[in-house]
Image (cartoon, rainbow, N blue to C red; front, side):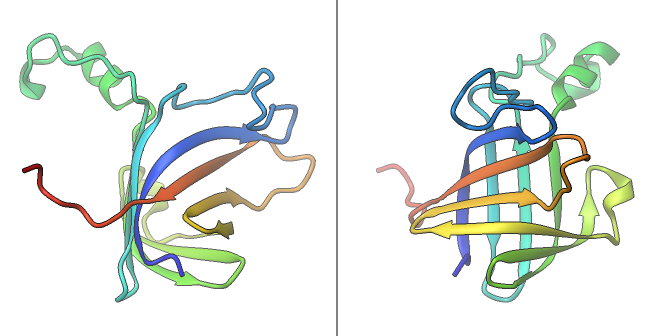
Length: 148
């Protein structure tokens, strides 16, 4: 079962000439250390956020005073959406209700899903003539506990 909170371990492009997770010469759009969380609630709601792990902080320290280029750099590669989900065994359907990309709102994204223990790998279905597709590898997190 996929209910729980997941941490993004890896994000790479597969197919269309892109290398896989074996490293050579892997195209990793979110960089070598991506950040992300994926939440699947028992009531059928889901939310995901992902971003490059090496984003520079804003020089002003405040979003309202950041320059246009700084704002663009801060959101480049950032993705987020939420809505409902259906676990289909070897696939998961995300029914998107809110998204950082407006064109995704109202869409359903179906992802091939490999669940092995506490590892969940999601990838879009593609045909060989399509461009590379993103693959996201997630690790289930234990329950959160505040630092003591």
